[in-house]
Image 1 (cartoon, helix red, strand yellow):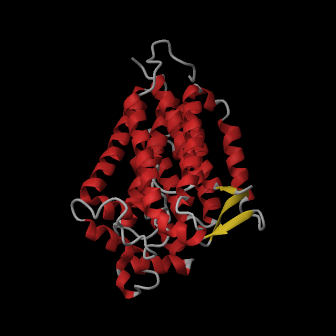
Image 2 (tube, one colour):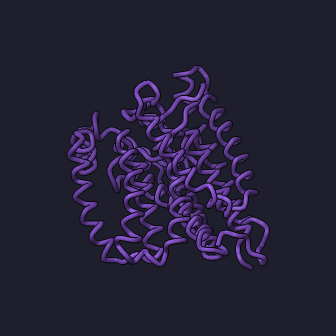
Image 3 (cartoon, one colour):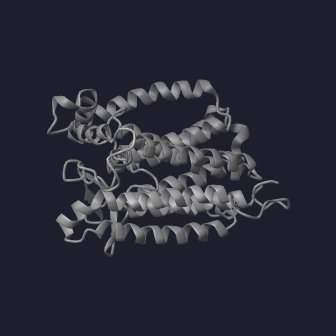
Length: 370
């Protein structure tokens, strides 16, 4: 099932590769533009964040090209080991003194001067394992007990460990990505309706169990009710996007990065891009993400076996869901969740794992049917 086919392209999708590199280039430019004021103030080095982002990008690009050379079907052989390692990291990060707390979440493990985020590894590890499971058990997926339930247990076990950190944003990306994969595999709509009803109840309990989540919901409904507290981020984000207009105020000329929008190089980098490059710049970025989604789906359709199809679908779904959530937060469509924008936001684990993931996607494109 997972052996390479004879009639394949044997070269990557260069159009997809070009899109990835363009997004990465835009990200590096925007990380510098959005962070140099904060970096100069905090570290006396305006290049602090962009130098680290360049390092992460270099490691990520090396990983992308390395993963692009590894035949994708080899990942099926190690799917169980990869998943167990990812679960081990999720347990390790919860140990006091091992896991690092940032922004109220114990989601990082320190490695020398850097840190890794185990939940980022889990997203890719679960996609690989679920691709194996769905490709070998697809005939059972319409059965709740034999196909649907085992996949749900796996997904929500990972989600539960991530919520112990807690990290609702990453958990949402993981669950939605896996639900897309399970749905496409042929699961019954009735099962999803039941899951959706249970999910609404569970989501309500998650919100009620943590006061800060209730505050985020109320801030989303009316951020001006608490403009200096829970509504601060979204108000400052909208203040950034609004003045951008059609053409923007010009690259490097953002006002919101002058300590109005907290750490604008991370989750709210799209707000700075909208302020500096305007509606046109934001639209071009969205177009690149749409093209990425289209080429990723095409790679999935053209993959030579079911494992490759599910793996490609999982990777492109993960990126698309993350983009949709991040931009929806920035423009005020949904409450703040703390999700990075793929290829653009500052961050080591996120950028490196994203590039490695698309490296696998590019390898699948190399093995696509002709």
